[in-house]
Length: 208
Image (cartoon, rainbow, N blue to C red; front, side, top):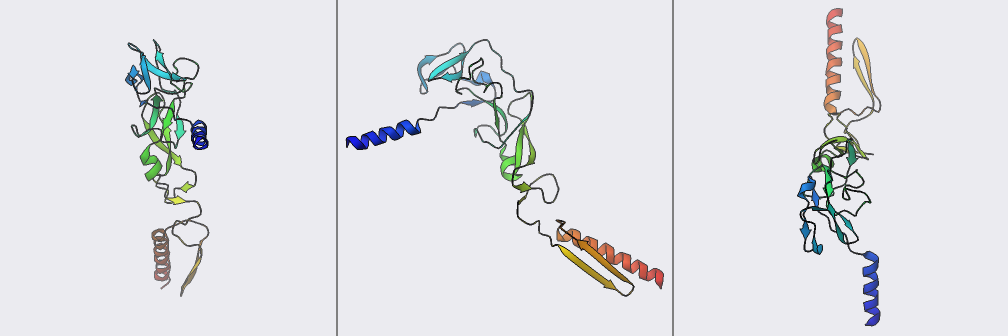
């Protein structure tokens, strides 16, 4: 029994306990007290901005501004927001005030539409919190139809087109249409064929 308790205790020490998080897009929304995570502590009239080994760090007369440059992310830090820079009131103190700003970088939260629907990186907007746009295709995804919206095809997959040589033979013309490693859908290919046929018919009409 003692050995079992020792094993359980050892596993607890190894895995540890995840630190609490409190995500906001405005530092003034950080709480002054939290009876569960910081029992017996109260930063009022200030707010909690940082955690120093379990002790709440108060934010006193320090303003917080969003980063002045953009950042790219594919990490979902919190379901409370959907893309853009966010603040973790309970972040591990970073050594300089304000203690909850990740040394001025804050956290760039991904946008669910960018990540799941468009398969693109999230670009967090500079100088503002909780705003973002969709950037480049995520690693491994490609914008097959070049519509600059969804990166719908993964590496190694086909856009749905064929490759090779198509020969069109008519009484007065021999037209060779080469489609070599071009990712064209069949609609585009048919349009090319129709335009070629119209050209041949025009030549025939002029001839006769």
